[in-house]
Amino acid sequence: MAAVEVEGLTVRYGDVVAVDAISFSAEAGQITAVLGPNGAGKTTTVEVLEGFRRPDAGRCRVVGLDPVVDHRALTRRVGVMLQAGGVGPGVRVGEALRHAAALYDDALDPAELLERVGLTGKERRTWRQISGGEQRRLALALALVGRPQVAFLDEPGSGVDPQGRLALREVITTLREDGVTVVLTTHDLDEAEKLADHVVILDHGAVVAAGSPAELMTSGASDEVRFGGPPAIDVVALSDRLGAPVSEIRAGEYLVGAAGTPGLVAALTAWLAEQDLPLMDLQAGRQHLEDVFLALVSDSADVAASEPSERRRGRRGR
Image: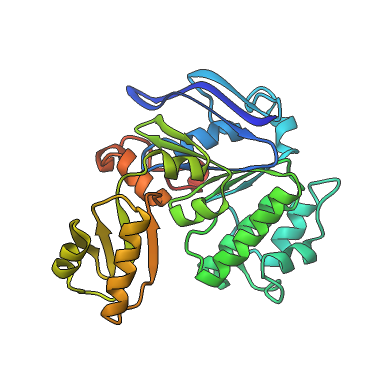
C-alpha cells in the first residue's frame, strides 16, 4: 500500500518548469530515497508533499490526504527534517525537543529520543554551541518526536561524521521496522544504496529511473569486472594474461573490459597470487548505485540556478 502518491506533479517558477509531470509512489513502511543533482527538483517535490508549496498541476496524496487542502490534519501525521536551520541559535537542545514534544498528544519521551540520536549530555547546550553533525541529529529528533506515520528527511547525513552517520542509519532503519514510511533526499549514494528499499532518480525535473537499488544496479550491468588492489600494478602484463584490456580508473581501482566468467576471475586471482598482490575488492557485472546515477544524470550545473536559491523561511538548500 502506498503511503505517498505522486501523479503528474508539475511545478513552475515563472517560465521555468522545475518539476515536469512526474509520478512515483512510496510504499508504507519502506524507505524511499529521492536522488538527483542540484536543481533536479528534489526539494521542490518534497515541499509539495509536505504541503509547503502548491503544485501547478498533478495530484499528490500523503497517507490519503491532500498536502495543501488537508495541511492541518497532515501536520499531525508527518515529521520533517530540514536540511539546515529550523532552530533558533540560542535555544537549548533539551528545550527545543521538549517544546516540540508538547505539541503532540502522544509524543516520544525527549530524553529517550536524545539518547537514540546520541545527544545525551548535550541538553543544556544551545544550537550554536553544538557541532554541525549534532545539529543534524537534533533535526532528526525533532522530526520524529511526534511519532509520524511518514518522515520526510532532507539530507539526513549531511555534515555528519562517519560514526554519526552510522547512528543515523540505525535510527532510520528502526523507523522502517516500526512501520514508518521514510522519504529521504540525499547526495550520499552509498547511504541510499544501504538504506533504501526504493529509489527515485530525478534529473531536470523528470523521473529518469525508479526501482529498488538491486534492480537499478543490475539493469545496466555491463560485461566488465572491477577489482581493487595496490596502485600502479602492471596492467599491461595483466591484460596479456587475461586476454582483455585492463585499466586503472582510479588509484587502486581497476576495470577489466570483459565479462566476469569463472575462468576470467580465476585467471585474475591466479595472476595476483603469482605477483603476491592482495585482492581488495571484486565486482563482476553488478554496478554500484553511484555508477547508475552518474550514467543517468546529465550535467545540471546550469539548471541549479533555475530554481529559487532562497528556501522557505531561509531554511533549506537544494
